[in-house]
Length: 375
Length: 105
Image 1 (tube, rainbow over the protein chains, first blue to last red):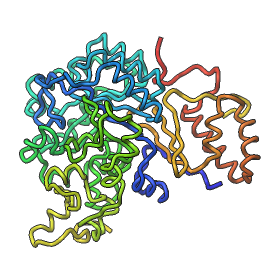
Image 2 (cartoon, each protein chain N blue to C red; image 1 turned 180 degrees about the horizontal axis):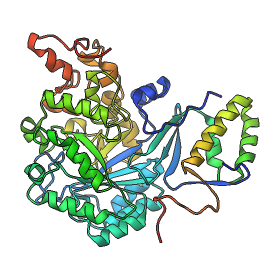
Image 3 (cartoon, rainbow over the protein chains, first blue to last red; image 1 turned 45 degrees about the horizontal axis):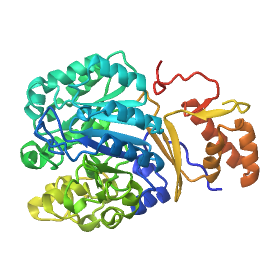
Image 4 (cartoon, chains in turn yellow, brown; image 1 turned 120 degrees about the vertical axis):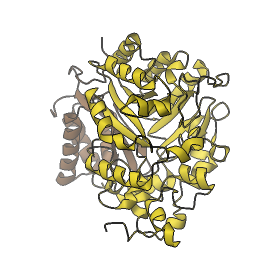
């Protein structure tokens, strides 16, 4: 019998995985996702400038999966032994019978039901229902420690409503994070955001802005500068309890101790995205026809996961592309495919936010890790 | 860990087989990030499938014999199981649920 690996203290860093596991996941993916992200509706009572799915009050809902279809999908995910569903949107609490859907998912043995919400619809009654349900993990979006910084992106009133929701969650057993998208305008607020989250009994989760949905239009304006990315990398390295959703692995090219988490792209390997009409994509940031893997009204989930050509030919291959000769590749994995494709239309180029590419662009050199990496 | 007891899986703990072995997933309900472990032990996965049906010590003995484990390998598995018990992934049958994941009355 091969030796039993030690249990990992947290989600293991890629280099902490035995090479055979890491390669198996990278090349062939898993038999099913660990986590499925499911945007149940694009309807939202906010209209954030960087929304990855371009949600808003005007979003159509006529093609959203019905409650019966949604329950069937839950059954398929449970049968595939998916461990966690990450509900998002839009604002998921605007999906009709959302609480019933959560109850159905829990009855089918899903280990964790994560909900990304703007917090505005978390009434005391709904919070009590969630608390009674158990196994819930709430992510409350808040893009600034100050009202002005947050509402500049999320709209007037967003900061106040999210903070009020966090106050109402005090004293409950519901696990929660404050979700913070790092942008040019709020980059100086990391310490203040961490303090705010802790004050509310929440962990802080910082994620990368990506040019998806409405974020594609505002990316140039909100995109952090290279100096801000360097500051973020240093800050995350010093705050290991801050979660990142594994969205900043491209910053590992800076060198030093890798950031926490799996630290590689999990799209179509460990996770995937389901959108309101049942279309399936590799991840939340790849919502374009090029990446569409299938539709659940036509094909069962397990068949899409196993048989999608875009999953198998694009994501479950080791394609270093232009990064293949860079000594930082082992740490950064070449960056985010979604950002590459959105900004360049190609997947074989370095991440447009590659810290080395930009640093070396002045003299036209290709990415070379040595000048910046602490080997 | 009490080898004379039968254990059940915490509602936030599950596992499944993969080509390289299997994945263990544990959402404790007290922190946002789940514990995810990649394992390559068919012995461990067989044991977890049967954990609710017999005392842990009996399962360890029966499966150690079937898989022909030496003492060092059996000790590794026992240590791993002790960690799962310590973290609340495996709960002795009849033990009140103390974790936040459990539905509240």
